[in-house]
Image (cartoon, rainbow, N blue to C red; front, side, top):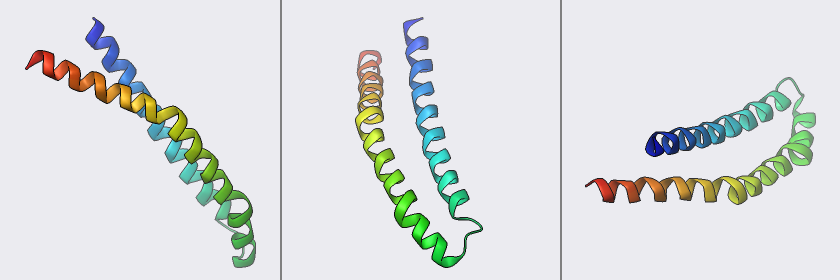
Length: 82
């Protein structure tokens, strides 16, 4: 039961991370799509690049410890089993 719960939580965290990064990329492309070259350059420099920087800080502060926990748990369970 404990192993199944840990697997579900780990899968959920990884899925959430993947969806979050995918939505960021889609939002960035959607923002740029349809703009003229000068507008796109200004939009990227004023909005998209700071957004990606903020998301990068968020990911490193939130998802990095969670992913480290998942990997640590996974390898500790593997050592116990084998």
